[in-house]
Image 1: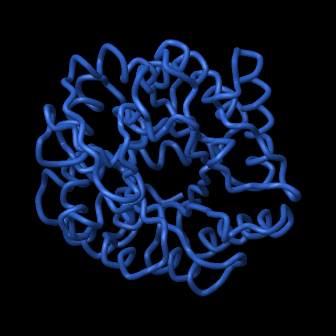
Image 2: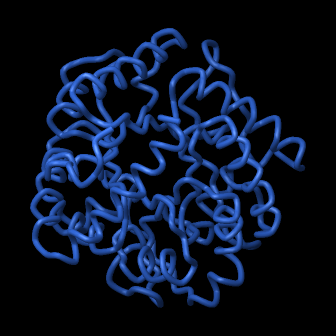
Length: 336
């Protein structure tokens, strides 16, 4: 595999993108994303999925194309939390309950073991799970049906098991949504929620599960699109150097992959253009930009990353660090 020192600017930029596409088979959209955009990852949604045989072939064809055009293997990701957020559905795939139904360690083990085995067998190497958010009692949380519960220590224990079981089966786990969205009642798919919580508030409650995820050597952490006004009054977590860089990287010491939530969500699209979002992502030590839907935004983001990573020595050094983290994950889970 080509060392990052020999990457072209286009390769360096493309590895920083995880993108979606339309279709259920290998098509010109995917060919363009891999050969021209040089995407580091593909994310799958229900519209890309029909049967196990179809999906296995699709994942295989994606990796064959990357190999044929001299690209590193791709992250192939999916949102398979169980329950209300699951892309693999009956009758063709085994369905899983939502994580609120998991009550103890044995529940978590069978759940994650069987889920990861299904994903790995299909050629999917990354799951955008587990949800590590905690909803305090008395809040009508938007996450109520997607969380382990209201006790951060229970969430931490259950999430740790999910991560370990996935990664033991060579499926990268991604803990989300840092630094915690259990307190929110507005859906960030629609617009940007704000939380007036302090760093101490987060540390005593919301961050406990994320520390556990780090202890379990979770491959990735996904940032929320929430603006935490007492920590960074200007930027949401996904675009915030104060949260992604200072809090997660430097204060908490996380050295794995950091990624945004989908930039197509209303929380970002209603407030920022692609150029602004990319500039912030690069400045904040965020490794992967997630753009889940086909459209010009993917190509625009690619060209903005190309432009910005050559703008300054500081950004170039940050880009090298991100590429090292990306390639380390690919070597560990895909190539070894």
